[in-house]
Length: 552
Image 1 (cartoon, helix red, strand yellow):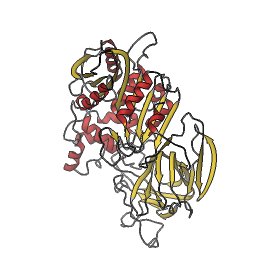
Image 2 (image 1 turned 180 degrees about the vertical axis):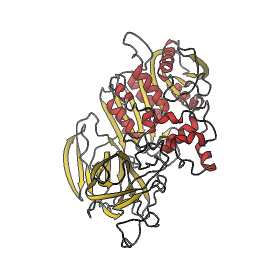
Image 3 (image 1 turned 45 degrees about the vertical axis):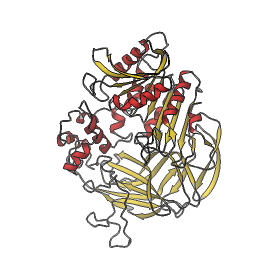
């Protein structure tokens, strides 16, 4: 196998550095194209893997990054035109048989997707700049999706880290934010948030524009008209997991979803092992090749199919919403098992763990609490301080200066009497009151094993602008869960006003959290009556083998 570096010329004359690795067998070959801002040379082992399996493998630095000419403007650059030009160039090469799969992870997945949904599809009589299939792993779908939750709050820590590492520069410095935090551990606390670029050790002129784009959902919408096959790969621990699910659900062509127990790097807690996604024990490289060959040969069912891992149990099941026949679900309500027959396109009937119920979620602390942005509940720790004596003087009026003051509402379930599988969408429904003009409501669910070890299970945060002092019902989406909970596990639910530094602090003044320079405390009350945690509990579900299910 030979690997060469060439330059593909974009429509405006910009030259894009491109590595090409060809199989040792005679041409022509189908091709895989990866367009990335993270350095094409990091993909050389991957290119050789594709080439060894009969694909011409192409990796390209996007415009303005590493060895490609031009200026780098994430999500606002020329990804559509440059991607279409690259795919058209591939099809003109003597070693190409005309079939192209666009592949990539994170921003590189965006590059492949945006080319697929904006270029003219190949084979429709005009144009050859669109791929024939797309592999999108942990897709970061757009500027608006990556900057904010769908429910409003700003994703501060992740965006600050990514922009410090990759924004407004030709190369990357993955440790840029950590270096800045070493100089000033409170760098993310300084206001306004929009001024972060000035506090880094280099200029970051694009930082302020990160928060301006509101075109959320446009790529998913355009994908609904696509007719080519899609493989969407994500992880239940990935912050963009719901975007991956939305892409799969909305895609117009044959679509497959593989949702493992992984984070954004497609690994769990362990380090990756030679292309093996940790936790789910899936060889993603082999899966990609098998799926790509089936997609190009039109051997995929023209359906929507998805599989989800039940945590690190090694077991997988179909994602609710797959095109499939009847399955049987069970729900646990107040400790009792009740069977319901349903069809897969509908969501599983949720389990309601009612707040204030001895068989649901018992209130431990903080029915009334103070959300103080100067002392926010942090996202980077699972420790919860609950006073041993809830009968301290004036317990209904927490004092933020007391060490045992409530900064969140905490509830706890009894131990599970039997193992439970969770597969599908979860949410919290909270009846609450606040005195703030604008308030964020963060809900974190933690699984406590019989030994007391805490493991994050689900999280969601929403922004509300309800009339101060008015009792309101708040729905907090908690994402798509795939977990197996052992018998004896307890669930701890925390309701807070902040989740910092993962999310920017709501100032409670009605000002934009990105530009605000003043913070205020907010009093909160959670009413147990009418509040519940809804979980997609599934028992006796038919387990599936993920690779054959994904590739059929």
